[in-house]
Image 1 (cartoon, rainbow, N blue to C red):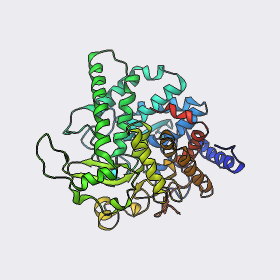
Image 2: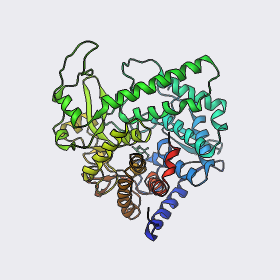
Image 3: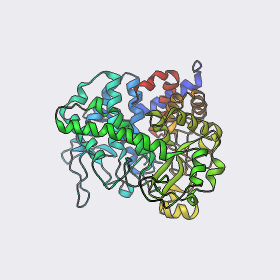
Image 4: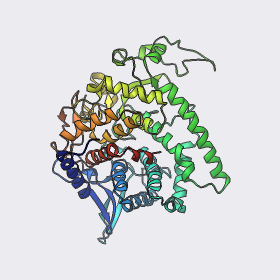
Length: 458
Ligand code: GLC
C-alpha cells in the first residue's frame, strides 16, 4: 500500500480507541472485547457481551501488535466456561460446544464471575456451532504467532479439542461428508433458511480438520483413530464441496439439463436437484468468467444464494481450488455494485423478498429485504474479504474495498451494518461503535500493509 496518509491514520486511530474501550476485564485481567460500546442505540442487551466470533478480529489485532496475553486469557476463559452447567430444559448440551458469548457480572457476594450464553438466553434461543470452531482456529493462530505451544498442550485443552473433534465426527443420520447443523447457528444468528449444510460451517469445519493434527497429541488408540477419521473426512469434504457446492456457467448448464429421479450408485445428479429450482436471477447474474460456492446443498436442495463469509473462509483455508478462488474474485469484479457497493461487503445476495421472506425468515422485520442478515452490508466482513482477495492474488480488489470502507466508517460512527440494495443507508437498527466493524478495518489495514500476516491462518 502507498504511504499512509493522515486521514487514514486518523481513522485507524479512532478504530483503536473503540478497541481499547471495548476490552473486558475479569479480576483485573483482560479477557475479551464487547460486541459494541455502550450507547442508547444498542439494539439488544447482549451486545455488551464478548461474542466468540466477534473477538476473532480483535484477537488478530492484539497478536499482530504483540499483545498475546489477552488472547491467551480469552482462550482459557472460554474453555473454562465450557464445563459449566448448561440448562437447556430437559437435555444437556453436548460437551465440546462453546458459548456464543459471555459477560462479567457480580454474584450475590459481590464477586466478579463470568457468565456464558450457550443460546439459553439469546434472542430466538440460538446455539452457536461456529464458536467451538473459531476457538480452535484461534488457538492454532495464537500458537503459530507466539510460539507458545504449552497452552494447547495443557490437559484441559487437549481434552476439549478431542471433544470438539468427537462431536463433529460422530456418526449421525448423514450420508454426505458435510456437517449437518440447525438454522441460525453461525454469524447469521436468526432464522434465514441456513439449516442443513451451510457453506460457512463447512469452511470452518474444514479449517479445523486441517489443523487438528498439529494441535492434538496422540497418546492412545482412541486419539489415533480420531485423527485418522479427521484426515479421511478432510479429503472427503474437500472433494464434496469443490464439486457439489460449486457453481459456474458450465456447471449451471449441467444442472439446467440434469436428468432427475436417477436411482443407483452411478447417478450423476446424486442429490436429485430439479432444474426447475434454479431461480430466475441466477442465469442472468452469473458472469461468464465468474463462479461461487452456493449457500447450502442437500437432498433435492441447492440454495443458490451467495453467502460471502462461507466463500471467503473457503478461499482462506484452501477449501476452494485456485481456479475457483480466482473465479469468485472475478465475480466480485464483475458484480461489484451488488456485492460491495457503498460498503464492503454484502453478507448474502440476493435478499429474500415477499412470500419467500415470510416463509423463510418467519416474517422477521429486522431481516427485511436488503437489511441486516438479509442482504445487508457488513463492515465486519471486510478483513475476510481482504484476506481472501490476497490469497487469490487480487490485492487490487482488497485495496479497492478498503478505500471504500475507510472513507465512511468513522464518519458514520462505526455502524454494525448498512441497508439497501447497494448498502448506502446506515442499518435501520444497527448499533454504532460496533467493535468488529472497527477491528475489521484495523486488521484489513495491517493485511494490506503486510500480507505475510496471512501465513498465520490455517
Ligand atoms: C449479531 C450478529 C452476530 C454477532 C452479534 C454480536 O447477533 O448476527 O453474528 O456475533 O450480533 O455482534
